[in-house]
Length: 146
Image (tube, rainbow, N blue to C red; front, side, top):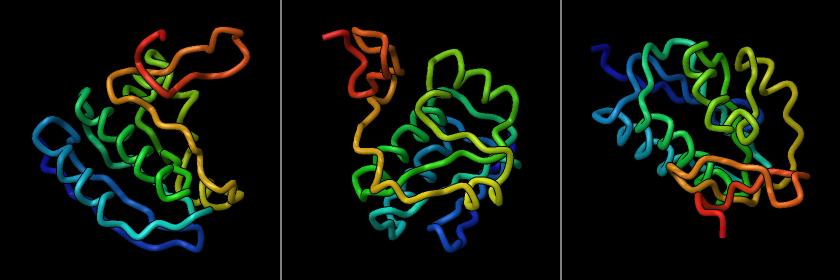
């Protein structure tokens, strides 16, 4: 088990969180509390740098979704940087690679950010993402088909 360390810094585009260690059921609440206390503003970008994350379970994935929702509530966007291959695979399987902006590193994420006034849609933790009825976009508002 690798303990979780969260390092916070500010970039011109907004807060950057660097995750080191394991993001699992024991440590995910630490990340959520950190994100809840971040000052985020309309048009900013929250970057979560996962380059040093060693392990991520479903609780970790749900916490990343919760971070996205918190950023959206503030009118901010979120990007995941340096996502490890195994986590990227899981994001792809559940459709969250279509919900999160994924970048090879923090520098690329912050350079490519264009303030869009937030994402405006919430992802239901555990609900995943799916194509809408017309197949033209992604419905990420709930985990049900209603």
